[in-house]
Image 1 (cartoon, helix red, strand yellow):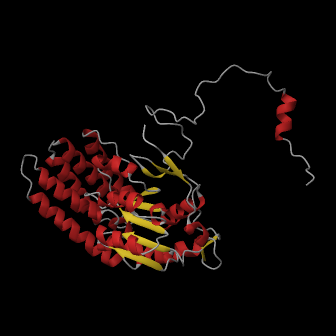
Image 2 (cartoon, chains in turn yellow, blue):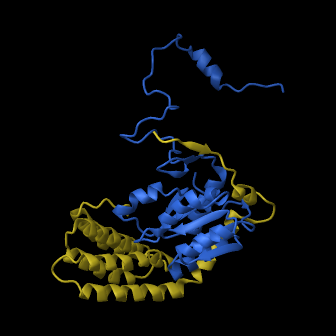
Image 3 (cartoon, each protein chain N blue to C red):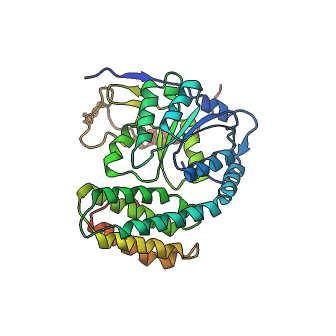
Length: 158
Length: 199
């Protein structure tokens, strides 16, 4: 058995957080949320660029599994995460996570599911155009994506 | 315990030196807006792992917020490097890893990299602040052995996971026979009743 050393470090951060001044939790959260609102326009543009990239990638797919293309697609999908929420599009965020789960599973198993990927990309487009806060409308779409994931036995946190 | 976003509790992040590793420009913008909103001022923005390593070598860091850098997972490798080769005191720095998605092949890297917490994106101010405050409050010992360097991972009192042997200092799972008679109801009630204490 290897030797185990146990340390009990004192975090300077803990002392700093207790220093006089600073801000309240409520003020800080409010300020940070306001700061994020200032990024919405840029986030929205990047989101649209990512979706366009996704369409272009899908057009390159054939009928058989292409590991490199799936890996490239996964990289693009991962970069979308966080942008929908920034723009208040929670259902789209959920769908983007679902696509990452699917592409990760396809890349791991080497099994190809063109329809499953297509359904996800169509869902992303659809959900992109829904106004924020229309989760009820989005629910059947997300349910469809859930079924695709179930077909691949993906245990997702979404 | 979840952080109440309307809390009037005060904290001060102004003096904390925070290293942020994120290769995605928008991801970095989001992170910067969150931590500056929380009051942080001393920020080290690193867009590559090499930059982050240089920053660790040249500065004392109070908090690291590193993206996992999926799909390469270089963010996890950076945290492992920090723990083993970052030098004191930075090797003990609190680390929050942010992850857009954790591929199946990276789950073990995520678990073993030595981060205090892994936060799934999208990031929100409340969750980031909550994790920072949790780290500051906790007293997890730091474990250093051949296969892992970082804060103790068993900190939720959920017992050892299935298939994992118990530690030498864990209590045995078997409960022996009672050595004394059971307490009476009066004795139990007395344990819970308030009493006046003279100090």
